[in-house]
Image (tube, rainbow, N blue to C red; front, side, top):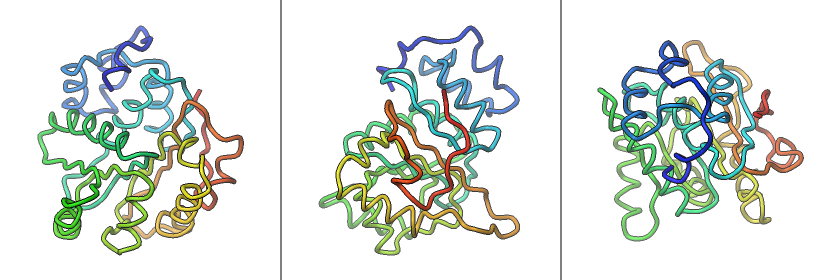
Length: 230
């Protein structure tokens, strides 16, 4: 997030462009963190995602892609104990960075919004108990961590509103991670064919500096994104 703050910005501010689509607390908090004007990829992504579309977000490193998907995620969270957004990344380190950025933004909310980066090692057992007892609204994890907790039945995905696969090119760069991600998108994270009355509509975003030529084919069984930004 810090490196992306120096990206090229457009002439309008978040407040001018999105005051009717993003909550006031989120625009204020973004400004406190130094994000007053959207970058081109942020503006195009927000316009697409806030309209309810899926998207492939492709832009160079440092263009502001992380904020581009964190803003709509946080804007649509409900203050209920359920997993509403899942962000998948190729490494634990990247997941930690994105979770930290999300927590910084969520700190401005008048509601209690919880962001969890899945852990390995000694803290994982305690964290898994927390996942069951009080699920956070946002989970950030690498593909292996997400597959582990989903396979163990520790996460209920019925309230999931947004799935983001960030650095999607890296997530499918090896046979092992590609197979894990394919499995998740084919099973636990598969888009429901029909949605029960009152259930949230799931959106899917693929985000990267470079996107595989046929991401929907290589990742399989997720609803193909219907917008490509830029």
